[in-house]
Structure formats: C-alpha cells, structure tokens
Image (cartoon, rainbow, N blue to C red; front, side, top):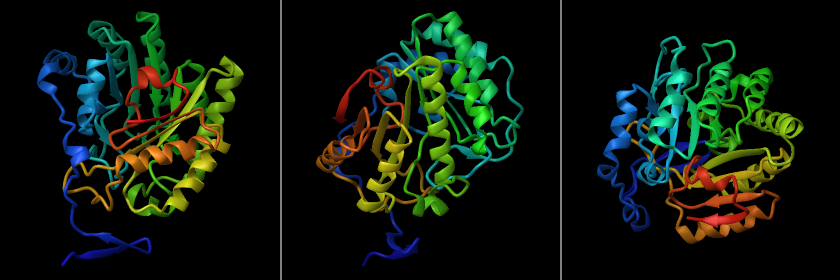
Length: 308
C-alpha cells in the first residue's frame, strides 16, 4: 500500500517512483568524454553539469557546450530539488573569470553557459563576477556564444542591469516550479521577484542590443503542479517578455531531495510545448530530459516549439 504525505494541499507519494522506460533508455556515456572532464577538473573549474548530476552532460559536452558553475560550489540557499551543497561559501576567486575564458578556449567550446550558486552573502549577488566572466570569454574567444543562467539577485535590478550590459546572447533565470510549490521546492524564491528580474532583463537588453536579445526561463514538471497552475505561470512569463521557455522532467538527484510526484510522458510534453507556444513565446523546448541549458548552442536560434 503506497504511503502518502501532505504538502501544499496535495497528496504526494512519500517514496520514489520507478524510473519509466523513456528516462532509463537515455544512458549517459561520460567515458567517451574523459578529456573534457579532466580538462575542467585540472583547471579547478566547476560545471553545474557535474555538480547537479545533469542527465544531459554527455550530450552537451559532445556538442561543444558546457555550463560553468561560477562563484564556488556552495550555495547560500537550500532548495528542495537541488543536489548542490548548501552552506557558507568561500570568497569569490578573482581569477575565475579569466580562468573560465581560457578553459573555454582550451576546450574548443562553441557555446558557454554561465551559472552560479546563489550568493546572497554578496552585495551584488555575484552580478559583477558574471559580467567580468562574460567580457573575458568574449575577449579571448571571439565568436563563442555566451548564455547566463542567473540567480534572482534578491530582486536587485541594478545587478540584473550589470549582467545584461556585459552582452550575453541569452539572459536566463529559472522559474523552476509553480508558486504554490515554492515553500518546499524553492523556499527562498518569490515568483513576483522572478518575473521582475526577467522583465527588467528583457527591457534593458532590448534597449541596448535590439530585438534579437533573448530572455529565457525554465520549469521542472512532476513536482505536484497542476496543469492550470502551469499554464498560468507560463502566461505570466510570456507577458514578462520571455522569449525561450524550457520544460523538463524533475529527476530526484539523491534520496535527500524531494521525491518525484509524477513522471510526465513524452507525448504530454510535446502537447504542452505546442499549447504553451501559442501563449506568445518565441521558442518552447519541451521534453523529459530537457534542462535549462540543453542545446543552448542552438536554442537561441530556434523558432517554434520543439520536443525532445
């Protein structure tokens, strides 16, 4: 007999459902990418690909894309879905922007995604560090695309402006889930703050770089959200000017994170992608293994809804 736990007015399985076939058939073959992994570790650089145990890291590495985790590997928040260590982080490494840029060159990357742990201990939330890294990559790697996946900077819009002014091709900030689930999934987050960050990034980026500047956000499915809630959130993101939306299946990284409530089948992801596209997004990328930076090298140039 299954056991259930109450959370946010919903019945949630206390256990961890068995992985469905459409998840297990996609095996990560990291042995083929040994040189990429060794190169990153030798440089003492962190990637969220490995720190968060992303199921797509082999795919992205093989397409010349990596997501660099800036500002250390210790987060000041403790989100219920995330496997990254939480605690008191070390001071930022002032050499990291240049080191990251040199590693992008050494690895021959086509596209670099920059993200970070939350650094609520820093006055600017780490925005200046993002900006310096973007500029260093552009200086040493002409033609390499850069996407940023930022925290919410505690709603500091001056921090948003500093990152946008550095000229990333895409400004990404994840919504993660529907607001009713924030208390357990993203307890330090606030949905109105997320909307404000995305709207301000779009406003400033469009003013500085024109209509081709892209904003992006992503949500995980399977945490207990309802379809009505999901559609409401997506409509709000479209109204905030978000260009690109990613929808993917939440996968529990370890037993210490929140359990999966439901595995959404691929055909449902495909249908949702088409319906949500109609809300006004430029691109919707929807599939069980889609993640924030999955196919980042091409998604910024893609039109329409895509399932994967």
